[in-house]
Image 1: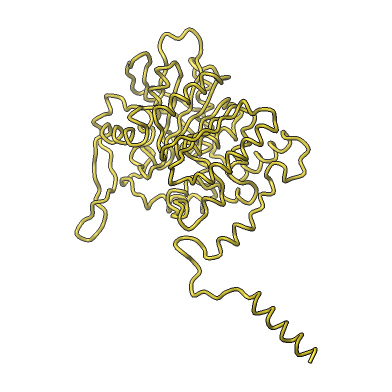
Image 2 (image 1 turned 90 degrees about the vertical axis):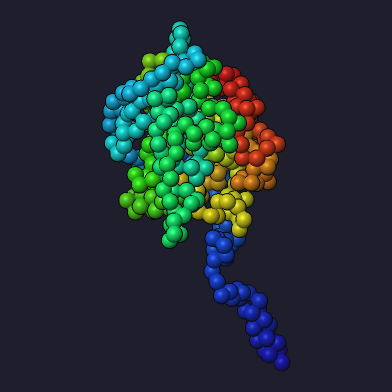
Amino acid sequence: MRRLILSLASVITIICSAQEYRSYGVEKAMPSSYMKMKSTLTFPMAWNNGSYHTFNEWKKAGRDILMKCLSPAPPRVAFDMRVIASEKRDGYIAEKIVFNISDFDRVSGYLLIPEKQRKPAAAIVLLHDHGAKFSIGKEKMVRPLKSEEERLIYEYGKQTDAKGQPVLESHRLIDESDKWVKACYDSVYVGDYLASKGYVVICTDALLWGERGRKEGSLYASQEALASNLQQMGYSWCGIMTYDDIATVDLLKQIPEVDSTRIGTLGFSMGAHRAWMLSACDDDIKAGAAICWMNITDELMTLDNNQNKGGSSWSMIVPGLVNYMDIPDVASLACPKPMLFYSGAKDKLFPITGVNKAYSRLNSIWKEQDANSMLSTLISDGPHFFSKKMQKDVLIFFNHHL
């Protein structure tokens, strides 16, 4: 009888420990075991998780991991910057430039230089958003030159032909940039705003946006193929973007009107991700502002969050990095430099619960390094939007720290 009881107990244990069988392996776009997968993420390289004796030792090791995950860097060549068009604006000159951002690409950008400055000025690297709007990039943050306003841009829109295929549409550049700035930036071209306040500003197109876009016309579905093709050649899309942003900083340092000891960076949405990544990677960035992109992996990897749709997140994935650090720890590689993080309480892309958890982590790290006065973690009562009030707060931040 005793043996029978033990045998029955063993059977019951086996039955209870067995996983529930499902006739599917994916729910929405998430693996059905995503909760178990998330539980395996221990972030061994997070500050205070490892065996590092000093914060600087951890920062060096963390940055080495970050750069390894981003690598390889595109080969560099001389910038060979040329001004191809310019116009005078209210207190500053707007130039369209071209330069070699790497040996892979010669790109265009907007460079805004204040007039009548007596000495080199502080400068801002502006980093544009994603927004699933690929036909414009730098034009989301700097007003196009008058000579370019009538230029046509091409994109596949929502209209379809008789076979149900998207129709290629053409639009005037100025119309599309004005509409975008109204929708996301409270009708303010942020680059022009900062230049009018005395800052040198530079903004370029990230790969797949604007004049680095798809030859055949912008198409949302092309981003997944681009990310896949880059990885099959040993690169990552986020890595290319980050190294391009670092190169842009290096170009700024060579411009006579720029004080190379006073360079900051600012971005909204995907641009915010780029801003804190750049701040974490590059010591030449002295202050960074990231608007509407901060959270933790656990809150983003859910059945209902926008991240699980895949498409728009490809440009912000650093392959393998989540096996070492969570998002706020990566951003904390910028500590103790001045950083401003601004999020929206009603932002549907970045849940406020995750924002608060990320902010708590950021604040604990800056405070531990006696640098809590250098960190600002703010929350607006609005959605995924860069309002005039937020822009004013960013200006105050840069005026104080640059």
